Image (cartoon, rainbow, N blue to C red; front, side, top):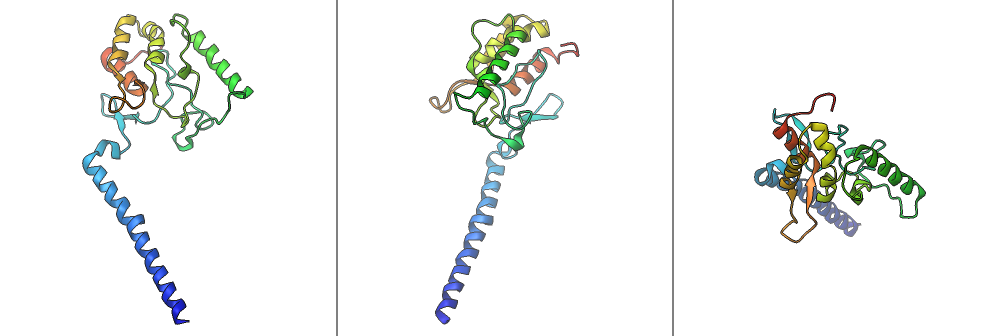
Length: 201
């Protein structure tokens, strides 16, 4: 009986020490360190507009409906997409009829809204990311949309293209990942440089 109580007491001590260390002290320590070293990232990489209002996160994609803004890649997160509380991919395989129908619908929509776009439609404009919330596009997918955005804003395509080129992010550490463009930051840059589009846009 005494041996059983000793084992139980040791198990309770290990449980309490583990709970205190791994469940309380470690998370608090890491949170404090991140607050000190990376305050913006610790708060979700929130992005503000020129008036200081939070308009989103640099880490989470969101829908832009106006033709005067660059569109992100499609989202399968949540019923209407872009739901940060329901991050997920569609889990549809390459033989899925549902996936083919959705891609065909995206292609039709993109061709209709981007009649002056050059060349074939980049793949990331018709495919959702694994999280459904990827905030980035390939440079090719952003540049493909330039004619539509330029026409909607009444600005030359060259000026819009220059904004895109200025917002291309390189590979991490020079070799990880691919060059990309953050859609939210790009659209904010358009507003800062050319003003917000009118209601008719």
